[in-house]
Image (tube, rainbow, N blue to C red; front, side, top):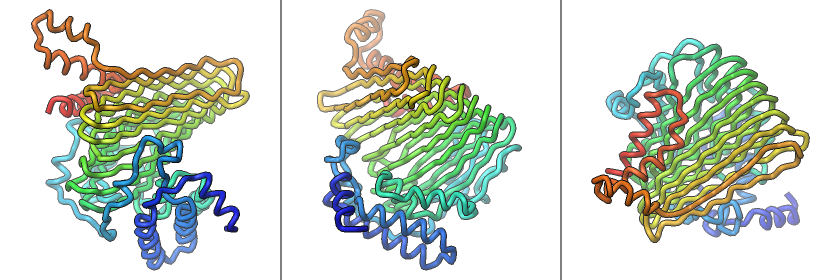
Length: 438
């Protein structure tokens, strides 16, 4: 890179002054991975992603996309040297969700077939180690300074993750149970999910730490839903309240496909989840919901980008944050309608509830429309509990504390009501309610 282009990158991507410590950790990890990996293309992908990351650094709050999400604690933490963690069957059993499912266990991002259930008919799963050369070359092209810093970090640490594919109608939900074992470790699993044309899959992700501490997880999921395919996706983030979680989900949908996703955030000190959805085929539909409950000094950041790239597609979104104590919530959403994407129907709604005088939410829903025959809207509202609603319940013999809890629970769990599987919906509802009323 020339001096002038390096200066331009620095100007375009404000660099956090504490970037160097984590960058040095990533470089050391990449060098160790490449030293033991005989495959040149994988080494090239890692090194190209590392160089792009080092050029841009981690973002400061002068970067508009990171204005409300401080990275100081993430960048100054002392992370351990990468090590292979171990989990026994009893630990897995305590983390299993209470509904019928095929649970696939990933320990620090590595799939553990011996701890996992049999896969249902129509589902195949393999390690990301077996990813094909075409995908590696595509990832190589992605490794540019324009990409998000934590996405580049994930690619630079390419080693762990899974490839999952679904053919036909898969009746049993599949659970990817991510267990992070190090109290101060870094895990960067990268997953590929393919729902074949006319196939149907229900996928649940659970991200949990087994120890308290400043662990950092940087997962990336790439999902392709083929023509007429159906995907139901739920992600639960419940890492420890000292941990950090920076995640991306890239979703590409073809014609006639249908997806519905719910992201629920409970844990973490500083967390961020970004859903990138691209509707690439006509008559595709995407429902994207999220619910987050931030307490103490937690920072919860939830973001969506929904690209309507072709005509006759629909999207629906409902995002809710409940923030208490001195916590902070962040929502950023974009619906982009490409030129020629007529008959687009997109709706995005964000509502936030503040439970204390020090709680804060920053919200920025946006529309970017380049077609003239569309129906799109967005809205955002942030406020305190409605006193009239509390009075209504108290007038019927309910205590003030119970009235506030009932109203807050109903508010927070609304995005979860879209989950079609009753058992999964009740499980997630109960987890959100339990944090509200520990």
